[in-house]
Figure 1 (cartoon, rainbow, N blue to C red):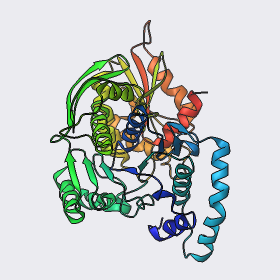
Figure 2 (figure 1 turned 90 degrees about the vertical axis):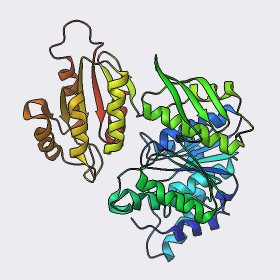
Figure 3 (figure 1 turned 45 degrees about the vertical axis):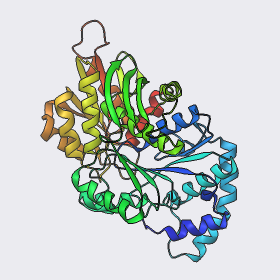
Figure 4 (figure 1 turned 30 degrees about the vertical axis):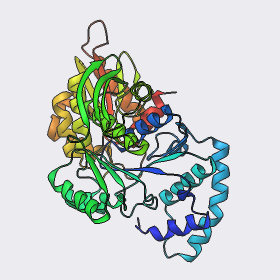
Length: 423
């Protein structure tokens, strides 16, 4: 993985700089980026704007990364844009020391698609970090920072301060910055970057935030403090305090983009409509009932802590089994330690990624944390799902409504399971 904006900049120049054809909202952070991007997209569409959204990774098809008006780009359109970009990408590769990456190319495809559409606004999530990420050719007018924690330390640095410094690189001259509550060591480099480039910052807990949240069937009802005032009775069809936080961030970003502030509030009913249609596949997504099967792509300790909190707060399982598959470079021990108090047993497996941690290795870690009697191993995912369901249903008398399976540990694990379970 070579971080070099020169190649993507050269490719976009050959394409006529499509990233300059529309304004953008640019998102970075450790967790919550995709969910927040999807909420921003939904809100903007509620206000009548044509949107392009670029997020990663995908669950089932690469086309999910590039959405127009909330829907993945169609197959024919994807092929057409690829055929336009690929010959130019080959030219760059022929004269460069390092070839364009997969992410470079999908980024170019997205920006070209949005220009051709055309869109009124692009909602773009970074792939990794910020300053040297391929998407950081946008110089977006609104920069969003979701919560920052430790992840991808081999690339971004092994302290939160280093990671925040890398991520604050998406803040450009004169931008409006919407920031989640951050650890003190992350806040400092963010504020320094804002001062350096003359950016204006609005922070969760100060200018915006969640005032109240109550559980509801299929989600939660929120009262949000926005930049332009209070938005009451907002139904969000997603679970967890972390999704409420993402909603507050999304609202503030859309307010900043549309020019709302102290003297102007967005139409409350339109905001409600935008949030009511928001979704986030693979984030505490229910795909089966009796027993309930939830898919959640938590893959680092910060994300898993949010998932565990949501499980404890919003679900009342009498018996819950975790099905876990992780990548080798992730903090598997910490993930398992967070899960242990809230699940009855764990089934460990191996997902389809070439970077997957072998199931036997993960099982050894799990046995140390859960005890061998609470751990089963099934290297093949179909077998793992079958084993987890059987464990969930064991010793249950009558109704299965109180038992469940949580598939988690990696977005790849969730994607693999989703393909099997959604058929």
